[in-house]
Length: 196
Image 1 (cartoon, rainbow, N blue to C red):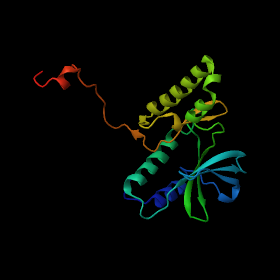
Image 2: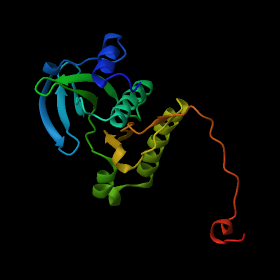
Image 3: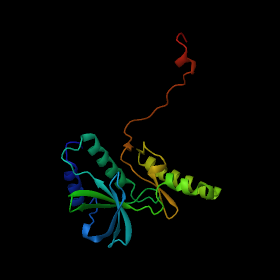
Image 4: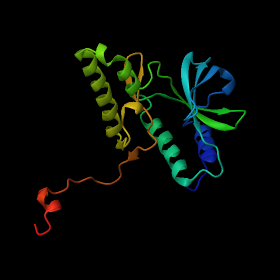
């Protein structure tokens, strides 16, 4: 997969109908919501939805590792795009001014779990906490059923939209292709005592 450029791969997937293409002119009210990552919020006229637009770096000097992470994220999003507890991937658009491709994702109107808990933890009842845990578990179950391991799951990669938690940022996820086996039990003294 690394031998093909990001632009070539995206163009091919759009032509094959595997990725939907959203016309940039169908987006309005674009606002930067995270300067560090370059994520913008936009209204999608056609879909009547708010989107988060995540820039896919269109840089000829992008290193192979970062390109592979982007390709992995797109591939994994396409495999689990139907699940309500995983951030919805609507397709790809291209920003005319920069010529960068952008992923169009479900906008999370309540932000990420980390910030949400900072603001609302004292207000949460047990029923709400249990629902949150179940949303995360359902999203993980979907990923694992498709042999995808997230590998970077934390509160900032869990988004909240209309009180539903969604797992996001599948860039470090990995498709399991090898069998995982348990390590034999080793007594803790083995690691601390030289002549054990």
